[in-house]
Length: 83
Image 1 (tube, helix red, strand yellow):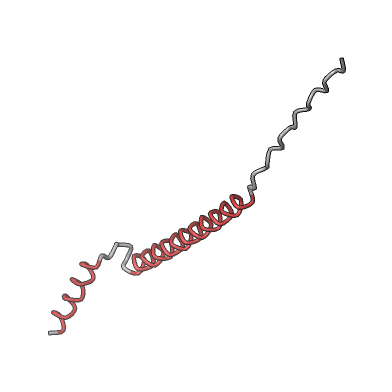
Image 2: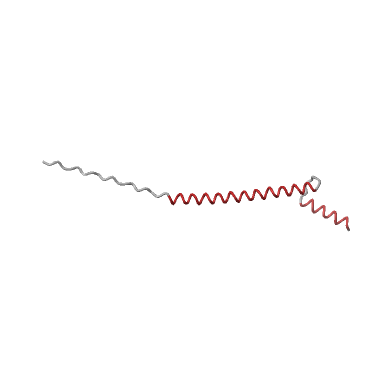
């Protein structure tokens, strides 16, 4: 009798999943994060500027801190003197 030929099993090729789309999404997220960081930086700058302005006013007022109420009272005193 003739020998039966063994059938070769075909190996299935695994399809590689595309990862490009995911990468693009990640890039977009990074850009958004960067924008947020920039905004926070701007806010910080404004805060520091505000502080320096307040400090300048304090220096003008003989080193004492002038609050809004104190300024109002000072104005009131000045108007009383004029009257």
